[in-house]
Image 1: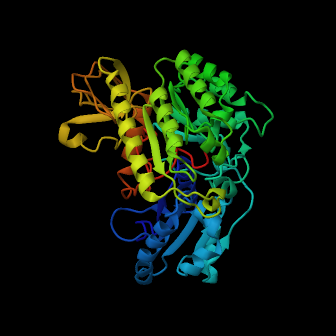
Image 2 (image 1 turned 45 degrees about the vertical axis):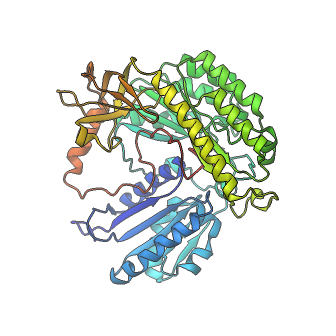
Image 3 (image 1 turned 120 degrees about the horizontal axis):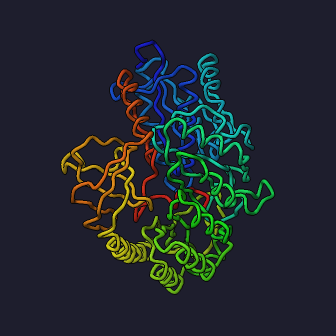
Length: 500
């Protein structure tokens, strides 16, 4: 289904963490720079790109299942191409074409900028092109970008990871950490603010290790403070930090920089020192809880979320109770919780004492019940507070039926509020009083106290006007781009970034 101008149409399907979603913005930008147009809702696109994740055991099944469904589509759609990139492509390489010979291009995590050329070569040579590089050639942020949000943006400050967690395959696929120069990061943020963006999320596989490649242990806190000086930037977030690298200067920067939000996603993974050692996590329970205490001393209103793995090899009932103990003490606002699954290529997959599935499920259910209770109690503390909400697009599934709108509080809690009488756009802000709390959202059922029109709302309105003349977009396959959503209580993947 080519566009009205004769250009080829494309669709990007994304699996995995925010880093993958951000890469997909780059892929979309590259394709549009090469003359492709985003596919509409009707008909089959001329190009489908799968940007894959390799964290979970069923990642392969999901990809090959989708590729199988596309085989007959490609047979009837002359000239259609299929490309597979991302972490699973980096891992499986030639295996993908062997299992799905109708795939045209396989590219890795280090060479997404080559996609247009590989597609052209595949069409000319009528042969699958497999190109996997072992190290990063071009930092992704130098590539063209098609951002899905007019008001919020991801900004990558590093790629790769230097950790060796036994459950994680990502460092082997993304490579060692490489940091961007602070000036390049700040220049990108300034350019985004000039386009109307008022919220940015600094992104890295291990975001607060930023500076290890630059030789400056305080580079991350300095970056937070410098970004805080950018006029027009209202909200700064970051994900995901590692407890090993979370230092006091970062806490001070968060507390002292007004537009750095008091929201923290801090991966726990396990509360047991024994399990943390087996995971090769370079902190223990006391260190983790010490960070939480320091954050709350500096920012009593901080909303803290986490990642937890249940059933890691060798986990005993006593180990699991240590995790429950940390959850009770830390009182996370919400948590990404998931059951351990073997990932070929990781040391943990070869460990003895794999925990029986029934035991893992029972522990998982207990953890979910405890976190659900804590999440609800913590949200109830928000009732009666007056909050400024950044109005979001597509966050409230029931908004049309309830005559409400939705958005994010400064601490990233999801808030549904009564639609105000005056027009309000995604990217604008409203001031509301919280009247009700559920475990995973807040309600403001009274009248809106104030509406503030913003440059971000202007940018959204301008983009909507431009988009009206083009085919409707096809959203990416997993997390929405734009204002990052609050982490759900239970999720199929461990954490905001795969390598945490």
